[in-house]
Amino acid sequence: MRKSATGSPPQSEGTEGRRSGGRPRDQRIDAAVHHAVMDILNEKGYAKLTLEEVAARADTSKPALRRRWRSRQHLVVDALATTVGTTPTPDTGCTHCDLIAGISTLSQAFSGPVGRRALPALVADLADDQELASEFLDRYFHPRRATTAQALRRGIERGDIRADADIDLLLDMLGSTTYYRLLFGHLPITLELAEDVVNVVLAGVATDQWRRAHRP
Image (cartoon, rainbow, N blue to C red; front, side, top):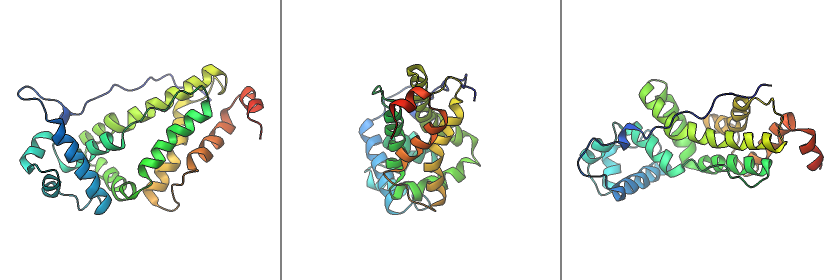
């Protein structure tokens, strides 16, 4: 397998986070809005989320939301990126421990109602709105992917993962099981899923050094 030569993609704040001038944004309103969005997603799902209800729960107004976010969909992307977050994969000195911790944050983020009730419908909207898709990738998907890529490269430097490993393919394999179960709901996202996936992936690309150190 070949090692990816691509670096992490350029980061973007998202258009709703930029202002051309005037008063600075009130972070308290942003936090209240994000909290309201996540509550509604958990309770009612993506399809029933309205700007009117978000504004009421956040004690603000619909025009205020419109000034900050271009659409309901952009608001949901921002709330997911901010609330679910892109927690960095840790650097503990243990390759498989780091990968398990990183993938676990993904499993934990989407194991509750918000995952099944929001992400599949949002992904469908991404297909019809390139601007929204770019924002989702820049704000959420690429940063999370980049931090796991760093963990894989550290594994190569430690001698745990083969130097010819295809980083992009490994990233797809590590994250795809969680997303697949989330989108189709055929099997649960369990607490053990991250460890099971990491062990299977490492079984294919680990060096003899790593295998000797981690014999059952």
